[in-house]
Image (tube, rainbow, N blue to C red; front, side, top):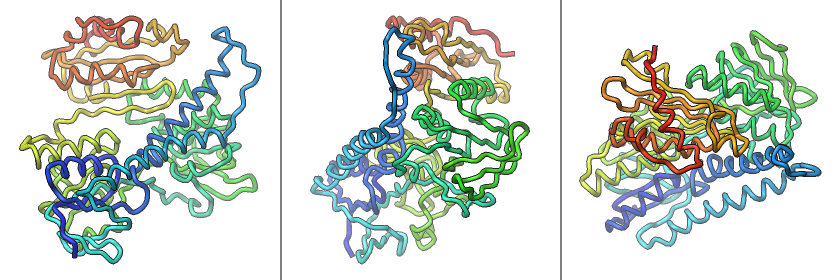
Length: 457
């Protein structure tokens, strides 16, 4: 039995940063990682996909070169070079995380799968580790739904698709939300035929209808086929690869593709932790139940990141670390409930979302103000030749505080932060409206947008 002040399981976004803070405070830390340092973001999520999105954008821009007065003779995709660039970026990040941990003299790194023996004891291979504080940062993985025929075909997930070293001739994607849309547009720009099948009546159904409609228009404009209202989806082997049968209101009932990607959600990596032996409570989906300060049902055990089901983003996982460190080390009672919903979907142009949607504001009954502006009226977007999308912001009519915003357009994933920061400051929207922003930028139109607020009716 080896004893430490803390045990951290999982080298995703929260774990390494927490190890750094704890060791600076003098704690000894056992750090357990079963495979790849850096977690989902570095290895199969943000880093590799956004690197490929950048390559796809370069190809897309090259094909549009004539619009900018630039002549390009031929545009072709060297997928091996795309993958090599991606892997170099991923390796640098992954190796950096591992080196950071192994170089810390107060961190002992263990490689293997951690499993609880009792509430304060974990087994890793032949080793048994114990600590007063245990932090679980084990992440999640792609869900594989029990749809008919799914186990009869060589389906792909976001992880296995990244291991593919060829361009699919026709990529069929089951799931029309963030992962499916990002991969779909990316591979379409690489030259693959792409069909997205979504069971809902619209893409990204958690967003407002005008956002969904705009996303659909952008994807269809690039030649992506979208099948909606797919109440029943069945997969079957085919000589050309895979066949998807979909009971949709429009379109042919059968789609034949070379590859199929399942992009229908995530599930936590908690199945082999032995949580029952520790008495740690989970919900019906396997997520670890935590309170507002990331504490589980067992004293001294915390769950951070995707495995707690309370964020599912890199930035929320990192904020989980900040909350735990503040409470344990700084006597600063930070809470998850202080966090404002914020995320982006990295299609091109990106969708950035904060706070409440228009539908949520309407359902709340709050008297509210709303303003929208098409990106065709944003000078920076016009100059860059990137005028797809629109901006929308919602404000409480009584206290003038921002309620939420949906910005779909070039640079909107950066521009939205001036609204997000104002929400955290609990300052009225006039703070932004009266600010002088730099010209020419996308963000400079946000004060103008706020000047167009009208009652939400």
